[in-house]
Image 1 (tube, one colour):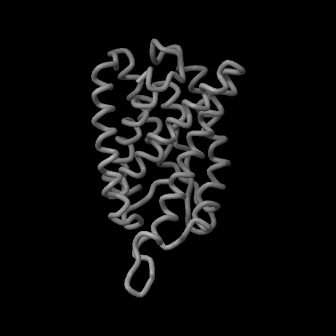
Image 2 (cartoon, rainbow, N blue to C red):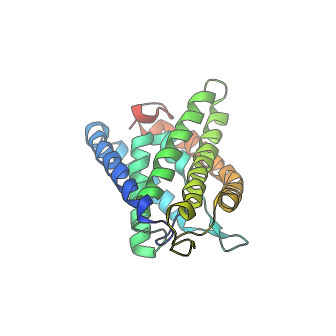
Length: 222
């Protein structure tokens, strides 16, 4: 799901850096104020697991790939802000060390997966947890992945409208929403099932030991 360098024009990534910069600063303030010594090493371990999972990609017809992201797992266990910062760090390291994703695309990847995906995951958990905790955990993993895919598809499909050469040809990503929505979102409906199972397992076995607050408390746990 990572967007690489060269796919997004400056009309997209420069404002995204501005928004992401504000969110990173706010998240770091919360991290310093609320993260305790018992939670930090566990957050680091789960973040490392997400890093590894994202490096395992499955190729699809048409030249695209998909991977499990662990968005719901991080968001439910540690809250939106911690998940956002952790995933942002993962995207930065993957871009710098492995060329997976891009530096110019970093804020879009971080906002789509780390922030929107985490908010969707915590929201889904909050809606369902009184009915069934297991269903809520699974829904959190699925919703985080699908929400991130929707944002990514929307941003990519917007590029031909934002940046064109004098002859009318797209300067960056060339395909519109008719292509990006099915190409990006449909595979992630299935990937979300794997992310849902991952969030379910993590919530069952790790939640009592990760933080004093119950899973899925979102920004309250951050």
